[in-house]
Image (cartoon, rainbow over the protein chains, first blue to last red):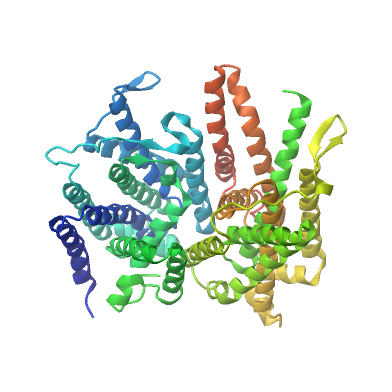
Length: 327
Length: 306
């Protein structure tokens, strides 16, 4: 039996080691895989704040992932064509700079989370699940029917965007850029859980009535958590678009929302590194089972079913021999 | 815009609405009686469509195909309820979402395994093909008119069943107080299986009927499932009446919005910009309707009672 802390260190260290090994063995494809793990884990860390800490079962987090992706796609495509983006009186130059793109992605995703949260957090339980799913579908159809940025075909960006002092075209350097952002997000999550805001948010999840009785406002706490969660997932979307140098409406699809949630559950709900363990497992399964059978989703479905029915603590729960972090 | 075109679009909206009602009524029954959110309802819709396409190809009979769709979807529903779903009633919504998401993966890939990735086609039978002329000179496909008729008949039948029959009384009692009807000697697990299979059969029927207009393919169920969610959020969860009103509202809004908005924009924009802006906005219309209803009534139009 090992404690969660050691498991987390081994998990994150292992991820970095695999990248180093792949670099030494000259296996750029493996580096791309671990980069994908880091980015998807980052999206999961975002959802984990709303889901694990706030108890908000959002089945629409692909919205923020997609908005992050399109923020990158739109800004980079304007830089690529040297045509500024005009929004009424506002003229915005396209850009290739990652920090600027990340900022735009996070602001846009945060705004979307604020608007969606304002409507959907008025409800709870199954209504909330269905509404977030429906808003996800709204963005999906909008991105398909809006022809300016590729519509259904998506949008290709020919050169990866730049970050000062880093050669982002080198796979290992891009991996460490994404890995650092993942570590920052995990650090932020760990601090948030211990901060007064995190404690209040947990209180509002466990008993909204009691939280209200001591003067907390559950609606505002949940809205803030939902926005923070959307911002982090939006950042992951921008990175994912940069990894593929391609954005398309599938980034908004409901399957992706489901998958981000699956990462959390496979790893272990409300656990700090749950999304990292889950995303690593998901990509490993996709790669391994996908090689064995074209229909690997059946096995993924059976595994997920088994985890939900028999091992509610997920992978981390099995390894540390503790059940769910909370119900 | 002429009257004839407008009337045709109204009928199209009505047809979409009644098919959504078949999906939404099953979802809302299952939620009302068992408190379960079922994402795999769209898979049962797909099972119905594939069963119908398979039987139609083998026998050439459209009626047999519909019977097969009902039977296959009801059987799939009953099996899934007994194997998986009944373990989820006592669980929280997150577990229900994940387990039924897993079921979608299993159903979709299983269907792809058996039938392959290429879409199948169901043909409209000869006796339902071709247009009919309605009063006012409206030419409308007979098949779509039949769909409207079937949907409204089922809505009426469902209402009678819930209001008048013994099963209906048990369903209403189950919605009001689950423990109490078990204490009164009703076999509650049998009731749950029947309700789930009934909802599944309605979804399977909808799949077969709509599959005749569109193609039958893996993944066809989930967009309809999400529309059905919008319907029950608007109508209020657990209310059959709400599902009917919500379904008709969503069907009409979606169809009329797609036709009217581009024309409305064309009055002050040039044609190509109007059609792209109009159709992009029209795709968002039902979700905006949902947001507006929630803003005014967070529990939906008919969801206040529970």
